[in-house]
Length: 114
Length: 109
Image 1: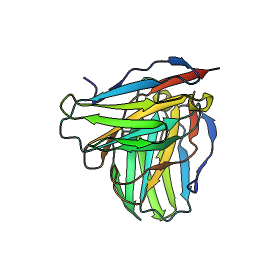
Image 2: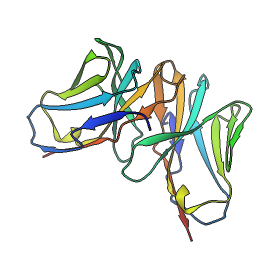
Image 3: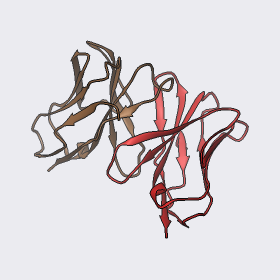
Image 4: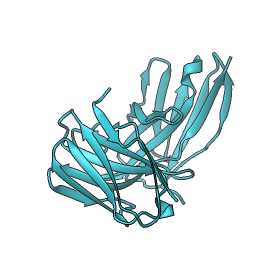
C-alpha cells in the first residue's frame, strides 16, 4: 500500500469553526489531491497540487483552501465550516497528472459539522 | 445528464456467478477510463485501467465501447471477497477525472 496518512480520521465540529485536515505521504509523489465523497455523488475534486506551493481549484473548491509547503504534506482548510461540508474527505497522490497514472488514496477523514 | 452514470445496484449474486456492470459517459472526447474498487468505509483502489482493445486481469475483464460511450466490467467466478462498490472513472479532459457514484456488488454464499 502507498504510504498515505490522513489526520484526523474522524472529527466533529460546530458550524463556523475553522477546520484543517492533513494529508501526509511518504512516496515523494508530485501530485496531491483532496476529494470529498457524498451519497449520490461520485468523488468530487476540491483542490489539487502539482508541486510545492503550486495548487489549483477543482470542481467544488468554494469554502475550502489548501496549502502545500512541503512535498509530503497537503493541508485542506475549511475557514468557517458549514453543515454542507459534512462529508468524507479523501486525499490522493499520483506521480503524474490525473488520468495518466494511478491515484492512490488515503484512508479518509469523516467530518461532521453540527 | 451526468458526465458518468452507473447503475447503483445492488447486484446480489451467488458465489461462482458471472456479473457485468456498465458505465456510460457523456463526453465523447474522453481518453482514459478506469475501474476502481471501494470496500465499505474504505478508500478507493485502482482495479484496472480500460484500454481500447479491452483487457483482462484474472477473473476481471474490462471493455470500452467508444461508439456507444460506455465501459464495462465483467467479473467471472464471483468470490465473497468481490463484494464491494465498483467506481467507474473517466478522464474527459486533462486534469479532470470524473468518478461515477458506483455500483454495489454483494456476493452471497
